[in-house]
Amino acid sequence: MFNWFKANQAQVLPEALQQLLQQWQLPGSGVPLSLLLHSARMEKNTLQLSLQLPLLSIRQPLQQALTEAGFSCALQLSYELDIAPVFNRIKQIILVASGKGGVGKSTTAVNIAAALALEGAKVGLLDADIYGPSIPTMLGLSGEKISSPDNKLMQPKFAHGVYVQSIGFLVDPQQASVWRGPMASQALLQLLNETLWPELDYLIVDMPPGTGDIQLTMAQKLPVTAAIVVTTPQDVALADAQKAISMFRQVNIALLGLVENMSFYQCSQCGAQDDIFGTDGGVALAERYQVPVLGQLPLQKHIREQADAGVPVVLKQQPVAQIYRTIGQQIMLALHWQTSAQQRRQPEIIITDD
Ligand SMILES: Nc1ncnc2c1ncn2[C@@H]1O[C@H](COP(=O)(O)OP(=O)(O)OP(=O)(O)O)[C@@H](O)[C@H]1O
Image (cartoon, rainbow, N blue to C red; front, side, top):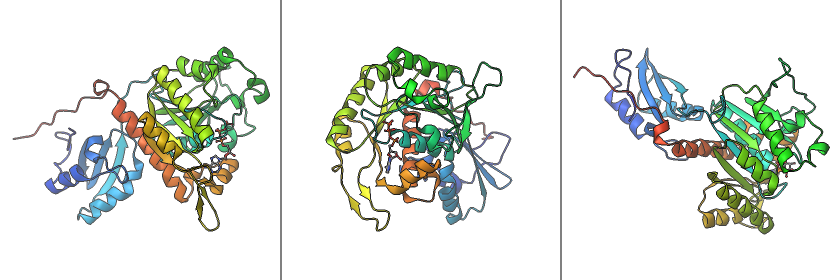
């Protein structure tokens, strides 16, 4: 249970407001807000909620619910992730993988990273795709070179709310694509180790496509929190996605779920849909392996255009942006439930006069 107020510092919340906060659920997921609260307090007509997750997207609907219930207070959201870092100042590392190339893994990684940043999270994105580091282009950073203030550690780039490091900033992609497993995983570890990452809640790693030696070694060497597999719905991609799921199971990395990309084609003119890669293949695969489907994205011109323009589509007023935001939120929630109870801060004791 959480605190309604901190003793001696603020007034007790009115009963009706306590009730509203008890009952209110996150739009979409239906998760009770009360499960995600550290504390709630009213100060100078501002309701201050300290959350266990960065969830800026709830501000507007919650404010609306408060107004509708007759509370005219302002709303202030803050968060504190009670998780011990897995690596230096990085709290969680999430791999984005695919069994097959070209299914939209990097596009998904970029949009998820930007979606988490929109929630107010501290996010990093590490582009480990030695076969085609496309993250710099997708974040408008192509041609950039990494600088090192102390000639030892590298300064990550910052774009659209995300700290970025890419193998593409450092080496010629032609050269990197012929690396063998140990070289590639060594380079990845170096990128992780020798970058001046600030404090991060989430570091998203865009893995090279496939399930071979390189991917396996990388997955094993990194202090990974969890993974996501991106697939398209057609049979050839699904067979490879299956291998990716097996690979993570083999090395005991928790799989948060599947993202089915290019689930259907959506015409940018008339909105008509067509299942050019088949229907719900990713959903069937997820069912078979008992993993959640985090989201289904259409094959849509806006997604590709925004990727080429260096501004992830999630930042735009597009219906598809909401799908990425939902995926981002699901990832945060899944990681949150996964975190062991012991790791979380114990709730503070409420001291009252009676
Ligand atoms: N849902 C989508 N709708 C339209 N275009 C998309 C979609 N997803 C990805 N693309 C486009 O498809 C191309 C490949 O995407 P992306 O680079 O993300 O794939 P990948 O799986 O990371 O590839 P690689 O195997 O090279 O790592 C890009 O041009 C991207 O803009």
